[in-house]
Image (cartoon, rainbow, N blue to C red; front, side):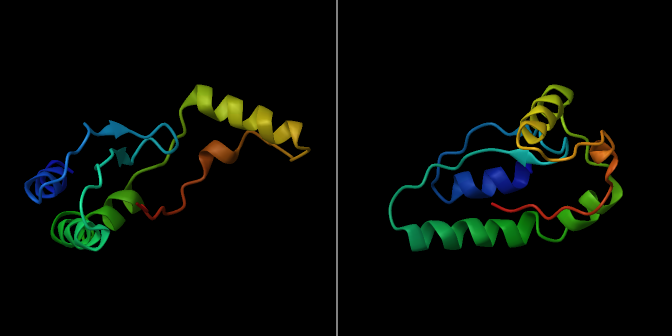
Length: 102
């Protein structure tokens, strides 16, 4: 992730520090500030992704268990139950693969 962030920065875009996602406990999230031509920005981000992340991320996510932050999981379950969804408590144990999307 550090190499990817450095690549985006070297392409001329400001990048916030990366933080661990509370949703899955695996994804590193950050924001890159768009400036200038969106097509040039998208190409730079895609190039950095292909060089530094796209070959690593799938294997990383397949080998690690996703675990939602406990407080977020409880709040999500309460929200879903309020919408009459059935919440069993086993949802946190899902170990399926995850594809990171930007």
